[in-house]
Image 1: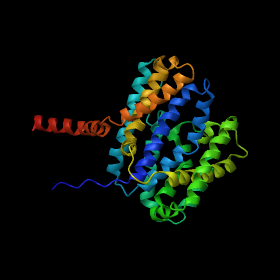
Image 2: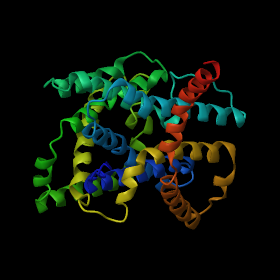
Image 3: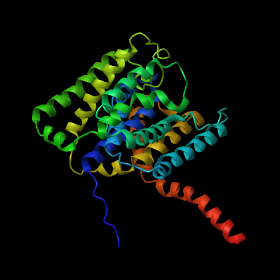
Image 4: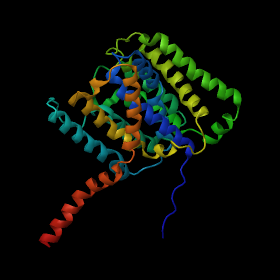
Length: 332
């Protein structure tokens, strides 16, 4: 019997499509933050909401998974791309140590998803989970510097957004978005944030928005806890504001939301190779070149969505089974 195709939610696919475009553009903007003021402005603007929003959506779709499913969907891709990054860096002449305890570039999110899903399986019925996660997010910043070990700072810091998504009631939200005033206020919030960043972008630091280190390492040991609380509150407002104005029906970009994991994993490899292993990005000079560059990055996002990454990962997973089967067949 052929199983019917699962009906996808256009609202969340639209949201994910928007976010993955923000992720890719945000990373590719990093190369030009010193050359183009707008690159730094856009990058800071994106970092205010893209990780919280992705964490929120990941939490919404998190259901009880057995350990084998988590290994196949998250740990195998993580190990695979750790090897790819290691080979790429060493091939370009960079000295890096291979380890599974310090994720390369964007791979920390796979480790975070693995930890979050594993935790949520056992604590999702705890009604105090959200306030506890917020407290942990604030307290983790006081932890002495432990480097990039499992990206522990980001895993704990963004966990509240995952919990919010897991506890999210979509129908209530859908009813709220029917109010025109709420849509207007949401759009106004996003516009005002951009205007504020445009004029005061020097006030913000990406590592702070990224929650990637301790308060002491970020140079905010005195008021770091207060900033973290404000960030969680404000980022939550942004996550919902974007959701309010996000189209609910199918649009030309909707299909991209189905393939965000492909794009997320592959774009980092492409960016690191182009920025560290070639001089091709240096040809961008002037406003027209920069506009063409951003357009090319958007095009790249759609191209990467066509890579059959799941099939490749499934093949990698099947290799040990094939070897064992061949050995048994040979010596039986």
